[in-house]
Image 1 (cartoon, protein in one colour):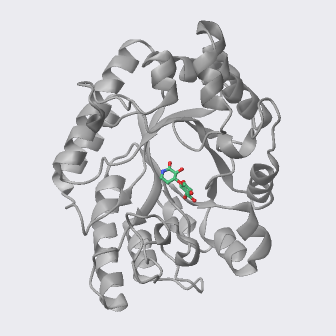
Image 2 (cartoon, protein in one colour; image 1 turned 30 degrees about the horizontal axis):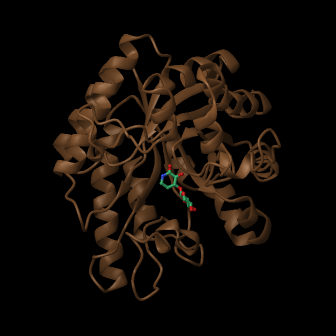
Length: 336
Ligand code: XIL
């Protein structure tokens, strides 16, 4: 490999990206870029339950399989994203959960952990077991996300159950708790950091087998400031708990930045460098994964909060729409 993964290897780290099987199949330029730049891949959506279990107990892992096969063919690692999440679930699930009783409710969650982790045992080495558990704006003093069907049906212990089940199912996998909105120097992120640390205090105090925290790393520098000291302190607290760390969904929303693409690219790159320098300064930080690799396919171009109103592509990923390297690529390479 001659790309970012090679730079990452200098310090024993890994670099990867979220991919879609269709792009690996249909866009040879994209496929070559992933093979060149990455030594880890993760599914952008193809292991979410809404995709894999459209009808209860009827699984479709075809997309995820293609991505895992691609990883194996290219000597890459694969992450799994995500076993338990409040979003991207099949429509049958929430009604089933609501009408189920105690034990059955747990089974509606653990069945997916069981099936997915067994299927990929030995091939997926790390899993996002619970994604996005906190949301301090939903009325609870502890900052737990209340619009989660799991939280509503099972209470906070859904997280305990998920991690215990994951550990029992594949004892070799690294188990991640992942969340967003932890990066900036803003009241919003401060509340989210506090809620996450308190949650971890409770979970680790109960002996829940969490190995690692995934900081999603969706930066939005034109809405909220980034402060090196605050983020470094936060990472130090996490690694002080004995947890491994990764940046699992890195990208930069450039909406609101300077209109000149060249100028914006330079700004985005320097923000990325500051963020990654702090991240990689912590020895517990094992890998950086971008949420996509090329601006051509970034989710940021479609997401209501981040997309440009005039339809231009967001420029928040290391490769441009023609798979060329951007200043952001150089910033990531330099940060490793
Ligand atoms: C996003 C995908 O990129 C989109 O294509 C999809 O429509 C919605 O989900 N945090 C996560 C990811 O954990 O799973 C989300 O992925 C982006 C935010």
